[in-house]
Amino acid sequence: MNATRAMRAVAGGTLLAVLASGVLAQGAGIVLPGQVERQFRMLPQPRGDSGVPQLPTPPEAVPPQAGSLRFRVQSIVLDGVNRLEASVTDPLIERYQDREVSLGDLYQLAAELSAAYRERGYLLSQVIVPAQEVRDGQVRLQAVEGHVDQVVIEGGEASERDLVLRFGMKIRAEKPLTNAALERYMLLINDLPGIYAYATLSPSADRFAAADLHIHLNERRFDAGVSVDNRGGRVLGSERLIADVAVADVFGRHDNSSLKGVASPGGEMTYLALRHEQPLGSEGGKLSLGYNVTRAEPEDQSFVPLDLETRSRGWQLGYLYPVLRSRPENLYLRASLDGHDGEERVFGVKDREDHVRSLRVGLTWDRKDRFGGTNIVDLEASHGLSALGASRNGDPLLTRADGRVDYGKLTFFAARLQDLSARWSALAAMAGQHARTALLSSELFAFGGEPFGRGYDPSELVGDHGLAAKLELRYAARLPLAGGLPLQGYGFYDVGRVWSRASGGEGDASAASVGVGTRLVLAPSVNGFVELARPLTRRVGAEGDKDVRVYAGLSARM
Image (tube, rainbow, N blue to C red; front, side):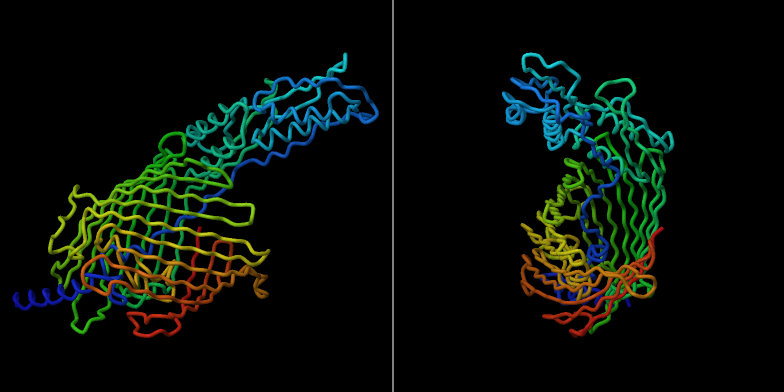
């Protein structure tokens, strides 16, 4: 009996080794350790821009009859200016010197100089025309370079106010106040879990050229969601039930703890992920800890039933820092140390096993431009470590015979969402990976499922190197029925190719798909979608055909 079991395991292992040696056979990628959970990774998203006060500044009131009061001006002196260069102020002033002007003209000059402050981001700075007696043709203007005097926190609990106040004091320290400082720290306050904040400014009762900053806090400590869809693919069960919950400020330090679970009703796949985030410092840095477990029993697609089971565990320690945080543009740097422990079992016997330890550094940049578009770019460099319990190169149990623990790779993601009109928009996106060594299964580039290759199952194709791209045209409308529910119709095309560095195998493979769909807002927190996708250039591995595939899903948040 033991001999028979061992022979079956060897036979299964031989088949898996063939599948894992090069570019994976159609549909085989999803069964590899580390590929199951890949479909639940979130793509980088542009950062929000809430909470920054709008500060329309009315022009200085012009006295009655200002246009009729005229006199000759020989020179104009601008007092109190520190942040405007002479190259900016002199050309404006020279137009009003050595000529006859009205009092209204001087107010116009003050408005132009105030606008110069605004254009350079000095929100509370302006130029005024003080009361004076004009002698010998000399006129005096006064620059008022405003700043924040008092920071007042309103609402929220005492435990929440400490860090918010530190952000507020960063705004106060900026003299004169700049738009960049106000935006950065108000946005960072709103990035804190469990908080929505907005700011108002009021004139200071004690100091000239100063304003008091009032930061109003509202709590949002609990967030949860549930969704169901059929994007899982036949091998791991098409239907997926996804639930997540996040609780903010559990330890009273603006922390955030979240739990996410995914399961297929037939029991083919279960995934559980825990994550905790903690602010670090008063410049928006965040420390994160993560742990996830995955278990999969894929539907057998081989001629010889293998009773295949995949298990994996992952952990992560990461740090994120906002170099630039503003409404139009953001730049975040990150670094992480993570681990992956994955194994394959055939007939209950361990057949393949990886222990991967990785150091990663990356950045995410996004920007809204004047052409009605939003751009986002994400870059990451990863290096495998031969430490912390990592597997040894050449270990016969590795998921890929040529795969290396001390690997190196670069990945990128880039996208642009472009408004074409009031209703039409277009999304173009691309992702890629380049590896300097053959990789183990958890680090392979994957094509199939979301976001690239929607006509195919998740991780339909995997390889050491890869490129994928998509184009999606969108149209926003309202459903005539049910009170005009918002909907978005779309059509897409996506294509991808993978290459392998490992010996043997196909070497490269490609696929493309096309489709149409509708996203519908059924209620303020309830969304649904229906999508038709057709594989174009390659059969779906688990199905053996290129038939049109119908996807649908429903999600709700609270």
